[in-house]
Amino acid sequence: MSRYLLSIAGAFLFAAGTCGVVAADGVSEGGDTSAPGDATITYVRKVSTTNFLGWGQDGFYFPQFAASSIVGPKRTDDNMQFYVPNWLEFNFDCWDLEKTTFSADKPDCFDDCKGRGVYTRGGYNHWDAFTLPNGFSGPSGSIVDEKAENNTNNSVNQIYLKAGVPVSFCLHLVTDNTAFAHNSAQSITVRGGRPGQGSFDPSAPVPDLFFDGATDVHTFRFDNFLPDDFIKIRLNSGMPGMDPGFGGLMFDEFCDYIPNEQCGNNICEVGLGESCESCPGDCGACIAGPNPTRTWFHHGSNPQSHYVEGANRLLIFVAHGVDDSSHWVQGVRYGDKDMHFLEGRSQDRNDKSTVSVWYLREADVDSAVGSSFSVDWYHKPGQRSYESIFFTDVSQTFTFGHVGEAGCDDCYAIACPWTTIEPGHISLYAATHERNGAIFWPLNDYTQDADLWMGGNGKATIGHKDGIGNLESAGTQFGRSGALSLVCFEVQDIPQTDMDGDGIPDVEDNCPTVQNSAAFPGSESWDPQQDDDGDGIGNACDLVIPPQVLPVATAGRSYRYSLTAQRGQPPYSWTVIDGELPPALTLSASGTISGYAMGAGYTAEFTAQVTDSTGEIATGVMKIRMKRPTCYSCHTN
Image (tube, rainbow, N blue to C red; front, top):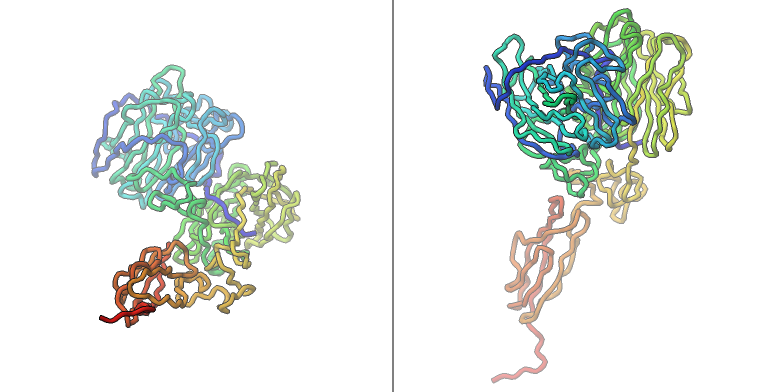
C-alpha cells in the first residue's frame, strides 16, 4: 500500500492535565525594549488570514482544533495540534506549577477546568476555520484565561528556549478567531524572561489593537535570546465578563516574508514557502529516497526490527516500559534527524506501563547522516523497557487525522473508540504488550502487518485498514494477560500515479511521461530506467535534437523552416551557439528559421542549441545549402 499523506505531529505527553502558576501584575506595557545581552522583541506586522500554509515551518500549537462538538473548559493539552523544534519546549506537566507553560491556579483539572486559570474551548461552528501549516483543516479553538478578565495576566507563563535556539526567530500569535467571544481588546504583550535576572524584561505590545471578527496573525521577532530564556504572553480583555484568549501560536526562523497564500494556483512558488510538503498540489509529491540501511541500534534487550518493502514508507518507532515508577521516552533521533512524537499511552498514571509512538518521513530517513537510533529515557525501567522499529508502506508526506489511544493493566484485548474512516483514508494502529510467549491478532477485520518480539518479555504489533466511509475501531488481541497499550491514528491515502502506465509509479520513474520499464523497452531498445548521462532523467525522456535535413535556400527568395526537438519538457527555446546562419536568415526562440536568402554557391553550417523548461540542453549541427535561382529565359547584353 504505497501512500501519500500530509504532515502533522502530536505532543509528547503521558500525564493528564495542564497546570501552572498565575502571574498577574500591573506592570506597564511599552514598546520594544532591550535587555542585558541585547535581547530584543520587535513587533513586525499583522496579517489577516485563516490559511497558515507556509507559516509555522519550525513549529506550532493550536488548542482544541477541529473539535467535532462543543468542548471546554478543557486542559491546555487536550485535542491540540502541536509540534515544536528541539530548541523550544512547552511544559504541560500538571504538577510542575512553577514551570508549566500556561498559568494556572491549581493542578490537574481533568475534564472540568473552570476556575483553574487557563483552559481551552472549541467546537463552535461560528468560530473561524483554519488551514494549519501541515494542511489539516477544521474549526479553530482557543486558549482562555479567566484571570485576564479586565486584568493584566501572564496567560502564557513560560515557553522555554533550549540549546540551539536561533539568534533570530519569530513568533506568530493568532487572534480574533472566536466571533468576539474571547477578545483581548485591552492589550496583548509578548515578553521575555531569564532565570534569576529580574531586570531582564524585553517586551513588545500589539500596537493599534483592533478586533473585527476576522482572524489576525501578529508577528513578533526575537533577537539574541539564549538557552534557558523563556517567552511570556500577557493578555487583558479590558472588559468585565470577557475572558480573553488566542487561537494558536506558530514559530519560524525567518520573519522577513509573508507566507504564501496561493497554494492551489498550480505554480510551485518555492520562494514563498511552497514545497512538496506544504503544497503538494502545486509542487508535486515528495520524491522517495533509496532504501535506508537495515542495521538498527536499539536500547532494549535484544530488540528486533520489522521492515516493510515499499517506495514511500513511514518510519515508526515504538517504545514500551513497565515498572513501579514514572518513566517515559523523549528525544528520539534517527542519525542526525529528530523523530516526531505522535502519541503516548500510560496506565495508572505512569506507574505500570507506558507506550510511546514516534515517526519520521522517508525523505528525512534518506537524508539523515548516520543510521543509528538514540533515545532519552526518563527513569528507564531496566530490563523491562523495549524499543522497536517499523516501516509501514505509506508516504513520507502526510497529515494525521484522528489520533487516539487506549490501554489496560491486566487484559487480553484493547481497541480505540469507533470513528468514521473516510474513503481514501487509512486507519492504523501500533500496540505493545508487556508479555512474550503469545501472538497478536487484529480485531474488527483489520490487517496485521507485524507481530514482533521487542526483546525481553515485550512484543509489538502494527496494522491497518483502508477506509470506506464506515465506523471503524482499530484494536488488537494478545494471547496472554498483561499491560497492553494501543495508539490509533488515521492518515490520508492518495494512491501513487503512473502517468505513462509502464508499471513504475511516477515518484520512482525517471521518465514518467514515456513508458520505459522492462515491459515497454521502446523503439530505441534502452534498458529500463536507463540514464546514460546521470542527470536523473531517463534516456526515454532526455531532450534530443533528432537528425534533420534542412531545405535548400534559393537566393532572393523567402525561406522558412522550423527545427524540431524531442522529449524533454516543452516549451523549448532555441539559439545558435556556433557558426552562422546564411545572411538575412534568423532563428527565432521558438525554433523557426526565416527570412530572404542571400548569396549562393556555398553551404552554411551552424550549431543550434535547444533548452527545455527544466533547463536541460541539447545541441545539433545544421546545414543549409545555398543555390542560385533557376533561369528559364536569360538575355545577355
